[in-house]
Amino acid sequence: MTAGHLFVQFQSADGVVCGNSLSIPTNSSVQQLNSLLNGLLKNEEPLPYSFSIEEKELVSNLGEVFGTMSASSSGVR
Image (cartoon, helix red, strand yellow):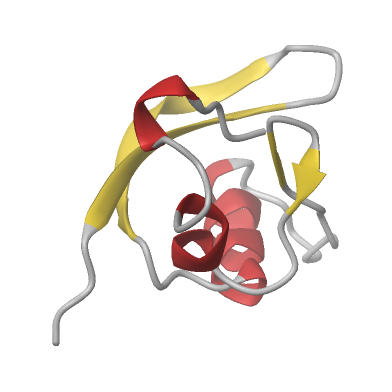
């Protein structure tokens, strides 16, 4: 079974957007999102980030969160 994809837009808690929208697999883990965001921000030393979708913290992968939500009405931070 192959993973679906979602378009995501990273932004800070203050609403500051980082880069363009990206299509990423729904099975992307928090660790993979951290690596991606550190790369987009060109951090010399990787920093830990947390991710939330409609104020619900992402703790495993995107697919698990979107399994209980409507993807069309959700924003990823």
